[in-house]
Amino acid sequence: MLCARARKVTASFNKTPLRDVCAALTRDAGVTISCQIVFLDKPVTLTVKDEPLGKVLEAIAEQVGAKVQPRTSGLRFRTGAH
Image (cartoon, rainbow, N blue to C red):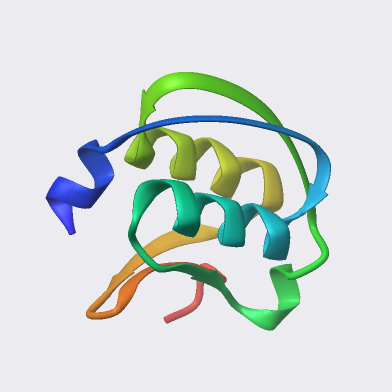
């Protein structure tokens, strides 16, 4: 998943539910990005241009109070508990 985190993305979100942010980033970055159900409706406001996906995901995680977890099928926003 390290190479996926290096992919550059450009995106703009304004109070967009995390479920829609995940769908947009999945489409744009070509890697599956998902979130636990507790985060689906959390709003995200962020504008980035040609930023590494990993940096973008960490900024989003900070906004919604999540952690980014690598998975065999992609990346997921999850609670801090394992």
